[in-house]
Length: 133
Length: 146
Image (cartoon, rainbow over all chains, first blue to last red; front, side, top):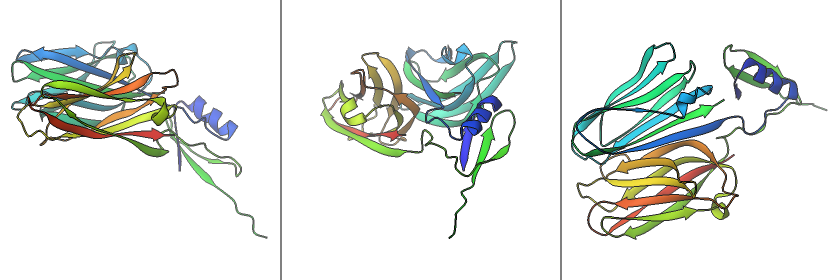
């Protein structure tokens, strides 16, 4: 089975040619190391995704150098008309990875990661990967 | 004489889902992620509270391959978290940054990011030992050859 992912015009083009060019998707990543944070809520915008490119957010991971406390992470999209979509809220311990199921980046807006740090001085490493189409 | 008829089914992901039948001589070239997975193994003793790195170059990585995942471990059973992070050098783009410990998950996915090292650049795998003692640290970086 062949899967063609993209606009209907793109799919028609592939069918007309009879084959698909080998590289049709580009995955990009954004990695953030917060440095030491005080206890409480910290919000980070994801600038690359905020550019509004069509595509799909694919995978998200977070880990911390703190080996004791349970922390909270939240992935949020705010659209240009101000609507807030919270895609994921989770408690995690030491490290955590989540498959996002190809959430469309559209409609254009900003994506942010909200970390609730329950151990003063903890460092967090955040990784987000998405597909451009 | 028997003449075989090849029929391929296409599923379209997009605004509309449709199924098309591609004519018998049509073919689809390999899709990213459908190729072979190749390993790059690394291991070293890292001095207490210091960082070492390995370089993955075009010579062993090839061209236009996709970073898939990294599996990492260390000999430390200390309370401190260990760290592994990947840099596209000399661009200094961070490709992934992960903390781990002997009792946490130690496989991290890298999103199948396409890398081109033909310009002489490399992928550096930094191993940060935070245990305070000399530790073995090592693992495997897996990449996809489309």
